[in-house]
Image (tube, rainbow over all chains, first blue to last red; front, top):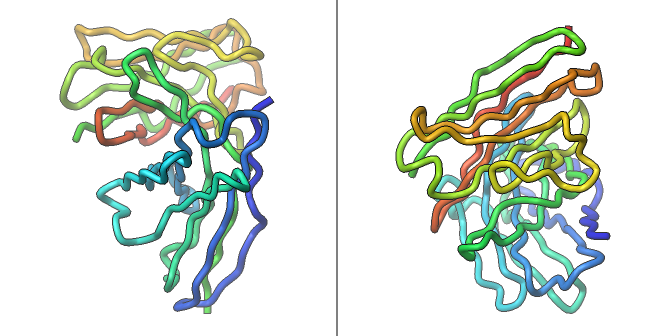
Length: 122
Length: 110
């Protein structure tokens, strides 16, 4: 059974750094793209970026380029999302999701993690 | 880039059928698959339809998906509505370089 288990809730101050994680179970971690999705309070889902753990090929949404960094360590089957200097506007729930492939070789979100709530407040 | 537009909210009574639309702004709706995700209050999203009309195992056959080229839109239809279907529903598609979510539709079961 495919499972994505995310790290716990975080409370940080503006300007602090943070790295949250998403550990994959039950599948060949290196062979499937993993993505990060932001959900701000009371708002919809926003795609941030995706990474292929096999070679760390990373693609960012134009809206999130430079805002946070996505990485992965296939040796521990874990993907990461990190910020070097948090802002109050980064307050949100962050979901990781494993992507599936379609017949054309493109991919879409399929399995979801439970989410990590990040609160940034002074 | 394209956008996916959904109605903000829909409502219907238990036992009835409801359809949620998702209109693609540019490019053909049929050029890439559409997925639908259900997000119950306080929970993470789950996939209810993938590749336009496929149901993951465990999703009841009350949920169905379709696309309509004439309106350039996809639809999620839920029949025999139950109170447990009350949730936010998001459509999603992609192109070669981007993943796109619709804005979400709040389904209220009256």
